Amino acid sequence: MANVLKVTNPATGELIQEVRINSEEEINQALKNGHEAFNKWRKVNAHERSRLLQKWSGIVQDHKEEIAKIMTLENGKPLAESRGEVDYATSYIDWYAEEAKRTYGRTIPANTESKRIIISRQPVGLVAAITPWNFPAAMMTRKAAPALAAGCTFIVKPAVETPLTTMRLVELAYEAGIPKDVLQYVNARGSVIGDIFTKSEYVRKISFTGSTPIGKQLIKNSADTVKHVTMELGGHAPLIVAEDADLDFAVQQTILTKYRNAGQTCVCANRIIVHENIVDSFSEKLAEAVKKLKVGNGLEPDTQVGPIINEKGYEKVAAQIQDAIDKGAEVLAGNQFNVNKEQGYFFVYPTVLKNVSTDADIMQEETFGPVAPIVSFKTLEEAVEIANSTPYGLAAYFFTNDYRTGTYFHDHLDFGIIGWNDGGPSGAHVPFGGMKESGLGREGSIEGIEPYLETKYLSIGNL
Ligand code: SIN
Image (cartoon, rainbow, N blue to C red):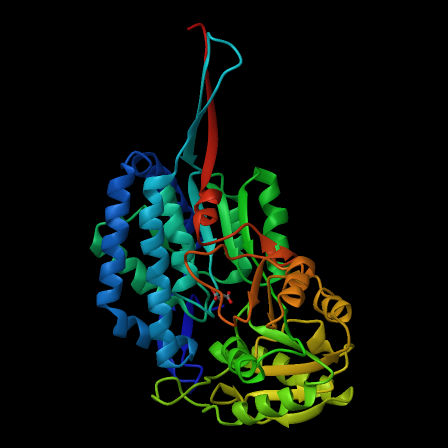
């Protein structure tokens, strides 16, 4: 296999850049360097680490247009979304620049006069991260910023589809004064990097965003050296629309969560569960709005929905649509494609499917595409049963203005992130992560720095 990654534009199939793949020796050397740098970085005081992070964030903002363009070129998302992602990415650096100063310990009253008890926090060590192509900037900073803030060193392997955004972000960190061995990237294929990272004696923590099967493998492999793990894995978000919901608002928020990044997000609504008395009007309104979305090259200013990342992704989305239709679904919008396999681009037009069978694959498996399958429910219990019926537990959404209905949904939905009349609950200030097979740990907010810290307890006796 060639030792370069061919990074292509998913909107055109054109080659953007060839990126050299690092050898196993180079990666192991980088891990050793990161491990050795840890003993210096952990001693840099928290205020100085905070200052360096703030500087990095400022420099990234100064290069916002450049990074947004790189991101749109390699990922395909509309330029406006890429600009938004640069802001989202820097918001994590800003947040953890502050949190660096707040990794508080505590004292505990002792059970005898001759002792004092002190609890302190210390960084876990070298962190190895594997980040996805769907948010090449924000998923990297969401891990790197709390790691560096806590005093850990950090090495990231970006997705093979989108390494360029990460490479640029790391270069800008060096401009900000973050030492080279403290923050590093390596380029490698997914099939080899997991083993290298998990086998390394230098790595103390693995942080991964990606699919559930790969996450499970990384957890298993991390067991041999008992590494810390944070896993942000697959999702299959239900979006429930109750009978009393404000339909226009619910439609607008459904579009926000479902068609952002062409439906290629872990938290996007994947199953639209609508009360039987309003399912017709909701579905028509959604289909009408979806037909107006402009599909195209993300570099064109009016594009709202970009391409699917690659052929494998497209095949999965197209197969799920066909399977749903074969099992009786009605197409209200979409089921159209602009695909050129030779050139290498794959556009799926925003699709709305009604009367989807709960047996359809799309109701069981993550889609990662711009397809909204609608099913109806009669009772709140039934809505919850459908919503909780998969192994996933990342995000869920519901729309109601009735506080009893909302409280019922909140209490019974087994998901880490819940949007009540809110299709966009993400942010650096909130804990992001899933239950069940959607992952372990949380990223963002005060919870997001915890996985990078160990607790150390000191008992002072003979006083
Ligand atoms: C994801 O889909 O993996 C992340 C989306 C977000 O942070 O909002």
